[in-house]
Length: 476
Image (cartoon, rainbow, N blue to C red; front, side, top):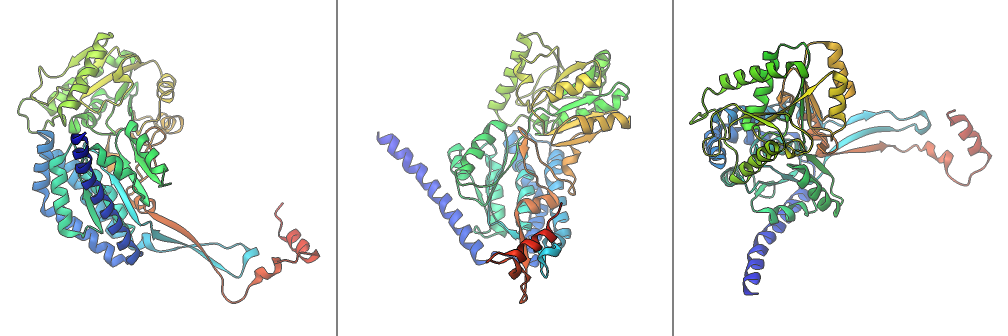
C-alpha cells in the first residue's frame, strides 16, 4: 500500500505540471487572441534560426536515440523539410491571414460577407519517435502561423531528442507560447485528455483510436496521421531498375521506419524473379556493407527489433521465403530483407511493418492489383511505377489513399504546397502548407449589415405580402 501511495504521489507531480502549462497557455491566448502577421513571422524566424544554429546537436541527439541514425538522413528527412516548411509559411502567411470575400444573395442585400481566419487557441501535438524533429516542427509551424499556443508531447522512445528540443524551444519561446512535455505513456494519456482546441496525433492506428476516444470526451477536434500498409505497384512495362531504385530509396530511408514507406510491392507474376534481382543490386549499391556503415540507420529500440524479428519468424513458419540482402545484422542495424510467398495469415501482411522487411505480392493484371488494394484498409500512400498515362489515371481514379506518387516514393510529403493526410484507418484531416494553416484556424463566416435593414420585409406579423415575396424569391 505504501509503495502504491508513493507511486501515485510521483505521478501527480508531472500531471499537475501538465495542468499548469495548459492553464498558462489558455491565459496567454486570451490576452492575445489574434497575433498580427509580424509577430507570427518573428516566431517563425526564431524557429528557423534555432534549427539552423543547432543542427549538429539535433543530429547527434537523434542518432543517440536510435543508437545510430544516418546524419545525412536526418539532414534530408528532418532538418531540410522543417526549414523549407518554415520558409514557405513565412512567405505566404500574410496572404493566408487575409479575410476572403464571399457573395451575398440578392434576397439578403444590402449586405457583405467574408470569412475571417481566427486562431483556434491552444493546440496539442503528439509526436512519434520515427521522425521526432520533423513531426514536431511541421505541425508546430502550421499552428504558430495560424496564431496559436502549442504544447508538444515528445515520445518516450526518443529521450535525448526530447530533452534537447525542450531546452532549445525554451530558449526562444516562453512556455505560455510553446512548451515541450516529456514523460511515459501515462503522461501521454493525460495529455490527450486536456481540453485542447485542436489535437494532432501522429503514430500507430491502434494508439490513434485511444487518442480520438480521449479527445471525444471534450469534443476536441482531431487530426490523425496514422499509416497503414502503403502499397507500391510495379507495372508490366516499367524498366525494373527504375522501379527498384525508387522503391528501395523509400524503403531503406530510416531503415523503413517511415509512415509512408512502401509496405509491400505488387509485381507482375512473370517479373517477380527479375524484380528481386534488380532490387538486390540497387540496395547493395546503396549500402555495399552493413557493418559500421554510417548511412545505414538502426532500429529505434530493442522492443521494435524484437517485433520485426517476430514478423520474420511468423512468416517463415507459415511458408514465406526470406531473402536477406546482407549476411547478418550489427547491433540494432537489422538486415534489409525481401519476403516471397506471403499470405494474409502472416502478421507481416496484417500489421504495418515499419522496418526493413519488404513483402512481394505477385499479380496477373491491374484489375487484380487494384482489387487486392481496395479490399484492404485505405493506406496513407500509394506508389505506382509505369509510364503509361492511361494506367496512371486508372490508379488515381480506381484506388483510394491519403496521397499518391507516380514513379516515386515518399517525396510527395515534402511538397509544401500540397496537403498531407490519411483517409479512414490511415488518418483524418490534413496539414502542411496552407492546409496546415487552415487546420489550426477557425474559418469564421461573417455577415455584415449597416443601418438600412431590408430584412424587415420578412419580420412577423406574416400576411399576404410575405407570401408574395416568398413566391418571387422561391427557386424552382
